[in-house]
Image (cartoon, rainbow, N blue to C red; front, top):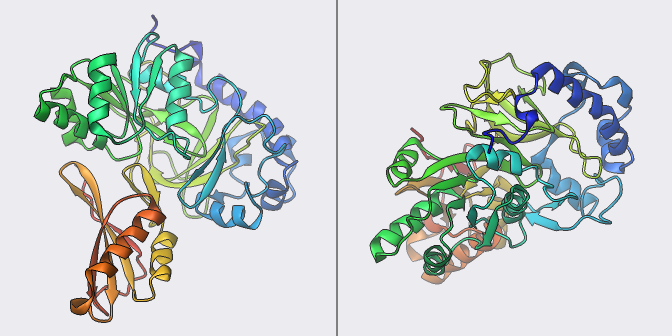
Length: 412
């Protein structure tokens, strides 16, 4: 089978650009049927938006604003031109942000990236992304099945059952966070279980440091990253080339500064994405993630735009174990517990896994009961959908610097 998914992988870059921007006016026309897009875009002539320069003049829509906009105009902020009729799945992600799934066998545009990462027809894929409420599991599932793979819808957690599945069904590929793959492999080694069938992995949802990449390679697993979000699906993906990610087809990616205007080639800026799906148009959605463009063609032969990959956040919103945690969630935890003064969530890396601790100021930390600490921990999990530790600290001990989330993880 070809190393390329189809001819579009290697098409002339200028032809790709012409095709994208020839389709964009029609998508804008569809978007303007939706009241949310009309409010946001204002007076715009779709026929006049046929170049990157024209697109850059449209306002940016910040992903961090979606929870408020959707609350004001539930459930989708007025951004769906034709409502939800015929859309197969509706999801919610932390924020909360509500996302619809598009139509067709590969609505998240994942098959192309999975092929580049190494999956092939006939592969059995252990998919450990969640199928519960959030779209992560469905993104990988639909893309793998469209590629001709068989999928084990395992979801996250339950390590013992996962090892049973691996030994019995012998999947060759893993899909999930890199942290959980290490947990599975460590558990298999400790318990004498056979996980040797796993030789490929598509990882996403968490940083993938060089140290963990090296460890997985030493265990015989070729692991590559996908950059995907619940709003968009597959945005970019790694290939056999040693550096960078290829931007997916049918996606217009811009890298912008704080003013929303594109930065110079090679400069670090925020990722802004436009998609070409009339049922669910996304126009200049600012994701809060930082990257930079790579200006040289990819050695793998694919001709799409290249980016360096994830280079951090443009705001305090932080991804922990594949889930976004937002400053407003920290504020909500403090609101539910009047005993808390100032609160700050600290994210660290412990043993190749993400860990978080909520530092919460209370009037008398020494006299605080274990029940209060347990109650705050339960609220932390309920609000963020993640487990974390709680440290009760003295009033006035946290810096008054406006930071609700501090990411202390160091990546090599």
